[in-house]
Image 1 (cartoon, rainbow, N blue to C red):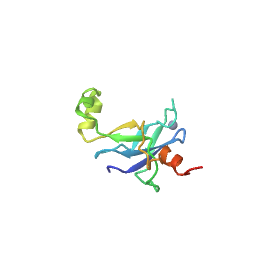
Image 2 (image 1 turned 60 degrees about the vertical axis):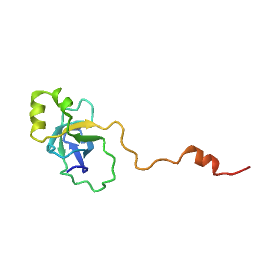
Image 3 (image 1 turned 30 degrees about the vertical axis):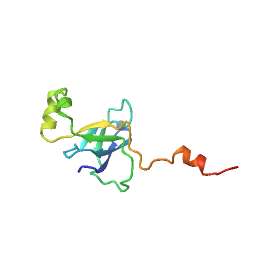
Image 4 (image 1 turned 90 degrees about the vertical axis):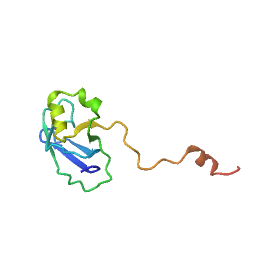
Length: 112
Ligand SMILES: [Zn+2]
């Protein structure tokens, strides 16, 4: 479901990734390992059983835009046409809270 976290665990290296559904659509039960570089294992879905929903995701499931879809392979375009989402790494996770501005800390001390 859109907004939900999921965890995929690799059967070979036991590594895991946390994913979030950015869009509405279907996600697969199994994906190629993305936890360890060069690992040829298969990761299995935890079926969205994630206790701590405040965890930060490392990957996201998304619906590609029409222009992105056109650049996909035929099999991936077919997958997307059936409602399937695609997986990509999250490069800039949204911060939960903004840190206090530097000026506020400097001004808090008052005159010396
Ligand atoms: Zn692995």
